[in-house]
Image (cartoon, rainbow, N blue to C red; front, top):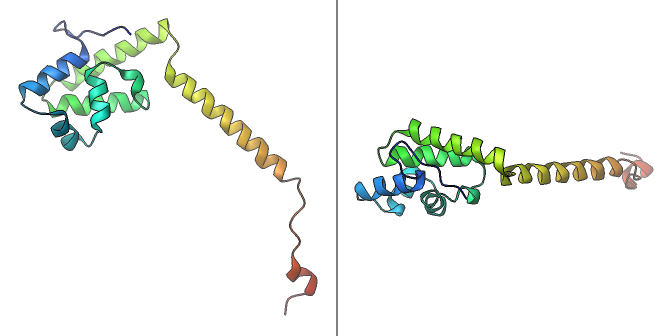
Length: 132
């Protein structure tokens, strides 16, 4: 996986990690402050963005991380968006695979729901006896 560098010449994750350590914070401290799982924060520090639930989450979690360690959120997010643009032109995104599987699941669900409308309705005993 290509590592995106910031204007300081460091990767996004390394920049966040150094800022966190400079602020004398642990991953657990940042997780408590941002309400982001330490698993995701660790993935961000390692530039393992493919472990994130979605690009929207990745951007939001990274922005929150940058803010917590007093970095320029705009520069961090801009670098991350540039990384996404670069990787989109080079390799298929794992996020697009998720979207495809969801749409396939949704189509299957719609087909089953539509087919079930042709099934006979359950016998209603109260309708036969009449209501009193």
